[in-house]
Length: 315
Ligand code: ADP
Ligand code: MG
Image 1: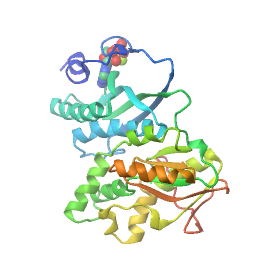
Image 2: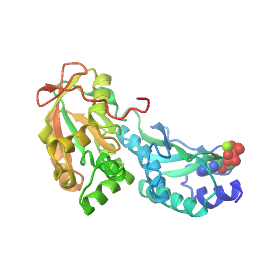
Image 3: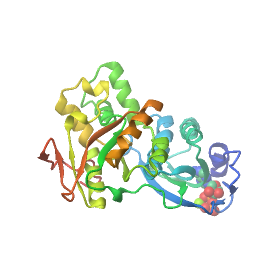
């Protein structure tokens, strides 16, 4: 199959949204950006065997490659709009491409983001997606706004994806149903887009959890020049993780990666609104602690934490 036919068959989407004046097919794409909005841009690469196990289904790879990028837009409170895809393939395998593009498209149409261009090359399997989103001027959420006394929240449950990876690598055995659930959380993370946009004007800081709660919270603390105290009993664990012994479950939740939940801070006066949000959404939001004045210091149950910093590619 020729490269142009491949692009035409799998990556030329129609109809383009009206603000996309030129899409796949020219040397570059052209989009019209509204004057009252800011453009929010992020890029992430997924490498075979590093960011997903070698035997991950193509559909899941397509979904996850976009999901991890959408999670960054969610963390900024941005509305997803357009993306580009740089795809490196060892060979042209049409059934793989069919499944990959189906997974990609399923999430793209759900999230309202449109593929406007990319690049296709031969080599070891990897993909780089650049997402572009928009938010009203000055309203995007940053890591740097946490204030002393703010409450710290996370969405969903933590540690499921890390447990899923441990199951996939046969380091952990779980009951069938729980194993399925955790592997599904690993392969199909849910970008918390609606929560992110709802947090605009409410959260004082926000980020997504990709490398583990402890590692990511430390980044937020440094950017905000504050500290944090957490309480282990408030860390949200799924029913599957609650069946493990507590220290195993907590180590997945605190230092495991790939959760793609949102971690955010907000003033105490925000609690009532959170309860309100919870009543209209199936997504759990848990208050896990409070911001302190001790710069970059993290304690759990009053003990200072010096846990391994989550996943680091160069260790
Ligand atoms: P050029 O050589 O000018 O960079 P390419 O042959 O790489 O052009 O790409 C031709 C067109 O197809 C461009 O509009 C490019 O954005 C698009 N394209 C290439 N690969 C992909 C892909 N994997 N997904 C989406 N669009 C792609
Ligand atoms: Mg090119």
